[in-house]
Image (tube, rainbow, N blue to C red; front, top):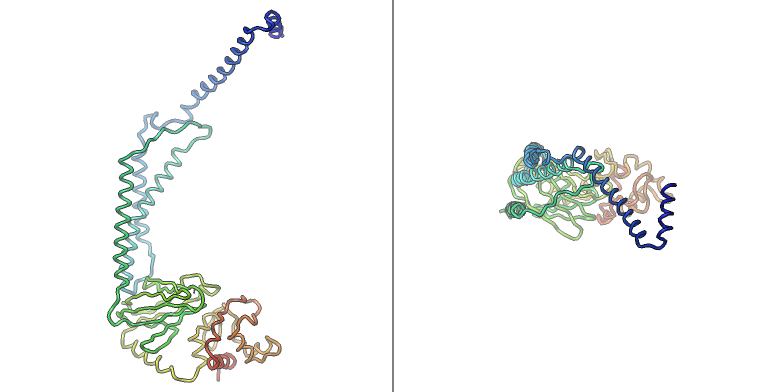
Length: 391
Ligand code: CUA
């Protein structure tokens, strides 16, 4: 209370004085500046031990170390990506060119990616702000020479790669002499192939070795993508468009067409056999295929050629797909499915208008509605085959 008393005393003596105002302002300045000075002293005491500055400590600047770590990581990363088997054994001339291009792209891009990421991760770990460290970083004002270097090098690389890619693409698209024409049609969930000059149709893609093939690609429904991994090239099948590509298969063997565009529930099963054979074997195959064209509609052949087995399991045809209902017990089941329809009528309706009745446990809009275009004769043949496969 001594202070209080003296204050009282003072104010009594100078009741409305300037001196009083000045003294109280001075007191406040004093209190404030003492608090700031305390903070600064505390900071100064703490800072050097808790947040050592690498350079202040006399340590070498870590740029060299970072680049060294980055270069080692880049070499390891590039070697790993080159050792990896990205694609199956090539089976066409184009494949070798594409593989080389792919390797060049890897060699150019992997080191840069790994180097940049290593330096970034190293910096984040090494130079992160410790808890309580509120200091600003050193001011940086750019570096003209460095900026010119890091703009020029990528510019030259990207331009060179674009020119190289264009040269390869031009090569791949070149027309050949005496090309084999093949029309490819995708539909949920199968591929079919037509050889207009040979007048042959097939569910299997058969190609003569070392002859240039010109594919024209269409779809009956949604977007699919026509891809034989061993040939490397891939092209979408787009509604309303005809896409194309050319390839020269150069290794006899058996491969697969894979659909590479998500096209519905049976997408993963949309695969078809590819056979690359010697020319005489191809000629014999074509002759057999073309010869079978004039006969009456054959249900078994239609089941295969129209791709029914791509979705349905049916033992007589040797198929086991599960996208659509199994057809093995169809002869027994068909009459019971829809009251008022005979077995024949029910199966026929299911082919022509698959939305009319959906078997329990299967999706409503899975089966394509395009099969009505087969015409009455072929549909009747299919119905007959499904109900009595033996006859
Ligand atoms: Cu057709 Cu995926």
